[in-house]
Image (tube, rainbow, N blue to C red):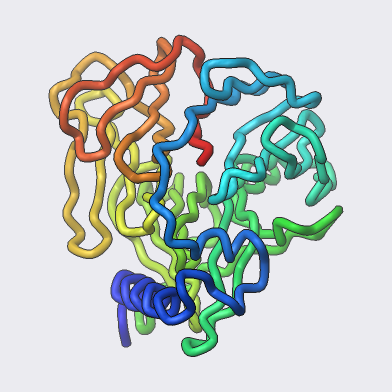
Length: 308
């Protein structure tokens, strides 16, 4: 039985082969989003955005009025759509300026929804894999966090619990305390944190969904290719950024020499070269491999994201 790590790599290879066979586009993908993920055009660096819980979103250094409160904005892989939680706690998808808003799911009350992420992947008929175009998010009920999912194209849809199965023969994974999901890559892979265990987990959404713990940390962000995860870990009383290569389980401190600044809520650029990170004084950017020093991008404090 392959581990979640091995299956993620195997699935990614199968998808790459299928892309080559079909000329770079998955002809059987079930949605436009899935087709866009499969295109072979070179990824761009992307535009930095910051949402701060108001109706205005900082996009490329300019404020854009979305018309409603925007919390925890997340961009679709092709940059054409934004997902966020509005002021009523509902899950919303809109165009890149807030136009064309659709309430994907209405909060039933008594819950706090947060941190939506796009799970978009193409179909691979030869592997028996269906296309995916979903949103995964955290639902908190009476202080208990769980991960839920709903189709990104839904209108007043009904979210359901996200399956979190362990690897074959391993103990069951925690079903509560899970938060901060981040999905990326072409295989439907996601990572998330658990507040009870203090660990980051990887979720493989293959034929038999399974997952496992990766490392101690919180607030994980999966790289665009799905091969690497960046997360937050406390070192000597301050929040550092760490990375882990999913292929080799190699963990690296990206901010080893900074002993005074807390780095939190990392976000990847679409080309995988840069991280945008929250600090107490604003948003900084830094090389994803940890080289060089962080550079202040804006004094605006909020959740950073990149739009392709």
